[in-house]
Every structure is written in structure tokens, then in C-alpha cells.
Length: 130
Image (cartoon, rainbow, N blue to C red; front, side, top):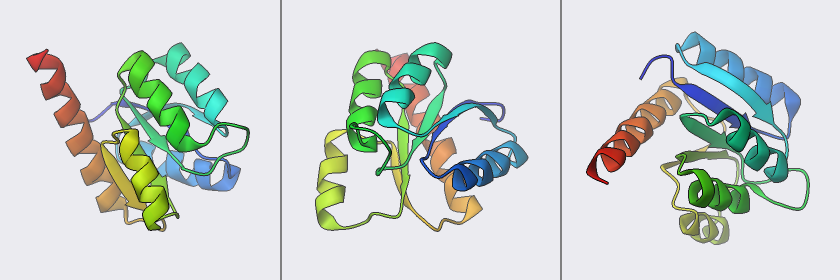
């Protein structure tokens, strides 16, 4: 879905900028970036993006998993985790947030694009069925 609006949640500014640039080269629009879970929830409400790309470990009290749960519950916005954490404990915690994808860093651009397209398509179908 070219032109989809995406919120990038990443606590390392240089990584967030790199992801933003890659997404824009793929034809997506990055509405904003956030570096904490709390900020992610506020910006999801403010911009209501089509999708959120969320790191698991973030600044602040709220990690990416907790932020993803709140975003899903309050706004029904799909979240894809983009993280370096792939241990069993983190994966089990992440399942609770019902993400639309889980991509490990470093990632291939094609993997990112494929996951985004599948998540957007799945979410559109879920809305249609409601």
C-alpha cells in the first residue's frame, strides 16, 4: 500500500532516521518518530498512522511491547516489532501485544516491505469483516 502513513518508534536517533529514509524510498510516508513508549502512544493518537514500526527496548518507563498493547487497544492500529531482541522471553511477551509482524535487526529492506504490505492488507481485511 504505497503512501501508507507510518509512525517509527526507535530510541536511537540515527537508526530512526535510517529507517525513515528507507521507508520513504519505498514510497511510504513517515508521519513522525518517537523514542519512548509514552511518546509513541501520544503520537499514535495525534497522527493516527496506518501502521507503527516499534522497537521493543525504548527510553522511559513503558517499553515497546506495552506501548504496542495500548496502541492496539485504544486505536486499533497495527504494530510491527523491529528489534534486535529475539530471545524466547521477549518473543513470548511480544505475543501478548498481538503484533502484525516481528522483524529482527539488522533487517533486509525487502523483509521490511513484505511485512508492512502483509500487515496493512491483513488489517484492511479485518476492518472489512467487522
